[in-house]
Image 1 (cartoon, rainbow, N blue to C red):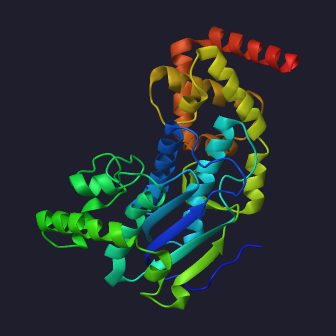
Image 2 (image 1 turned 180 degrees about the vertical axis):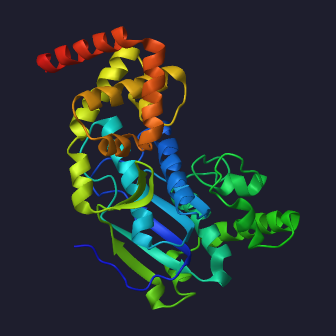
Length: 323
């Protein structure tokens, strides 16, 4: 059973989401880190929120983010999306994340402490340099430049230190030198609020997403299981497209718009349609609105013509017979 607290005030939350104990690491490659950031960014954009800081590790994810939705829905939106991507790409089952996460409602007067805590977690993990670690937002604060992650509000984070950008960046650097020595402890941060600020939620298979043009549709556990029953067919279709067009599965399941990658994605989706997989299940699997995916299929059909697609379908059935 999932556990929910009836009162979850809006504001900034410090989130700890560890990996499933005894299971695979959260990230197995550089591409996996990028795939996670893409899905986190999608959730932030959909829910119209921004993060102030993040640090990603093999065994846990630490985020300081604005939360305006029920917090369990917000965590589900990006953790479940990444978990499904990881299962498809690495062809494994089981939990990627632990079934519980910790959340602290950060009081306005200690937001700077929370930013320092997230970034110094890199040092606590035994990594020598915060600045050189690529999977933390610390470098963006030091350079005052963040043109890649639109959902990361570096300016808002620096504003917590001072209203003038140049002074704010200097104060941040000075603050981080001090926090390096004190190594902000999570419990110390929690005590700035009260005992109720340290909270624990249990995750559940519910995701907030966009399917078939319906924004912010709530998928219940039952409807999510209904979509997941088609994953095996879709997995096979992606592997088939990967072999036929020589495009890595990671790219097919990513967001690349390169013609060859889009064609491979469209072929996998088209094959799934021929196997009577519902459109909403295909859209959920690729994390793309169905009208967009349907447009990719039509473009591929126009470029390739019917004969090559029919030939691919024959090969597909031959592969199924062999299997």
